[in-house]
Image 1 (cartoon, rainbow, N blue to C red):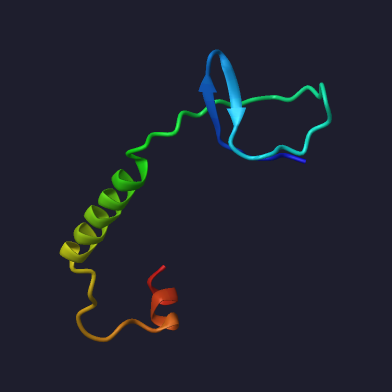
Image 2: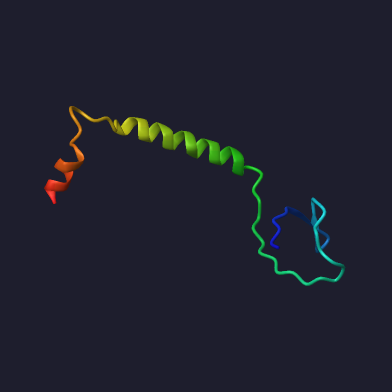
Length: 75
């Protein structure tokens, strides 16, 4: 069963920050993805920029929306 865990690289060794459910000497496949300490702040800033951009686009309907039949008749 796949597990996702963070680890710290120190002295040439990856040290998991949580216990892993592995048998002694079990072989595993690693995918290394560095974690930026700034990432949460960058994400929140990007989300705020996205929200402001969407709000500025003014996605508001003017007038009555077409019915399903009217939409179908357009095709």
